[in-house]
Image 1 (cartoon, rainbow, N blue to C red):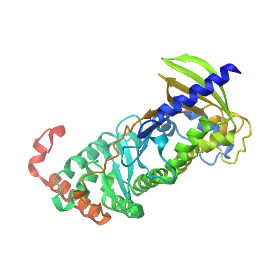
Image 2: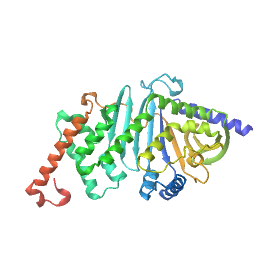
Image 3: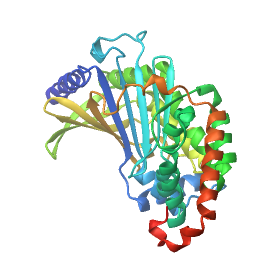
Length: 367
């Protein structure tokens, strides 16, 4: 009992230290090998009737998935623990699969900004061959030649942050699929736009506060805490809590993961139809008096025989992602400008192909 009380005080103080910054960063990863993820997905598919069968490539993507979310006080002056739920937060999110960022979303004030890395999408997500990756690289390089009248489109195609209209994601996807040549299929463009929509919903003020409050409330709840030793310089604490409390704490992330798995044709990581009443455990890590990580095994929410799939949340005070907007002088990206820019790049590519002198230059050095 004394150990539990001491652990409870330690965790509460560690959460206070984490929220003493003006921003909070959460990095979410699955702590499993591609083989372990594949086995978990196969069990999930079997429970779901076997209508959707996972692939080894899909398991690799999930094993490599790195989701980073940062939220903070817009004025960068007030500690997170001093803010009220009515106070607005700025937020940013990026997704990558073990390499360059594939996509990112920012909600700064009333404006939304996105970033899409064409090369990373082709290479890391869709496993494009050498020719496809070279084309994606050339797309980013050629974008630098777009005129100043297409500044926003130039920045977008070069993989930089641009302001967009969040109500027109479908139009951006259509522009990419219709004007992207053989580099961006309609299916891929739609999924990219959908991924950004999902990320944008996670960054709404309501969702941001829901996540911060749920995490804080869970750590200060009537959960049972017990010391679990040390590892890699961190004190370990095991938390046992009601499944409803754990689901509430993870709700925004689980919603995003569920939407993404459905979008890419994967069986659900968490069976939402399973009414798990058994207590749920989480592992906490405390370094130098600051809460630095929380690990939840998603298999606990997925029903019997689900197996293990640990979701690790790395917690950092401060913002690991810039919460600053790009230069407002660059303007908002219009889908129509994106269409014009892609047509311009297509003409540039055709002109390059028609250059008689091009064949005289070794392949990797062709202009």
